[in-house]
Image (cartoon, rainbow, N blue to C red):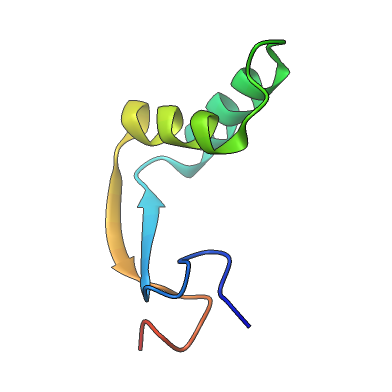
Length: 62
């Protein structure tokens, strides 16, 4: 089964500020024009920054 967190790459984008990251996604998803989660997620990563780490959710990162 494919890891939904890293897309089987073994690498995961960890937001630098997880709480603000989630707030940005929630705020953007509430807007009528923002219907795509991927767009909201990319915007949140741009605003808070991220660090690429080994995926903590699957064995590919280990």
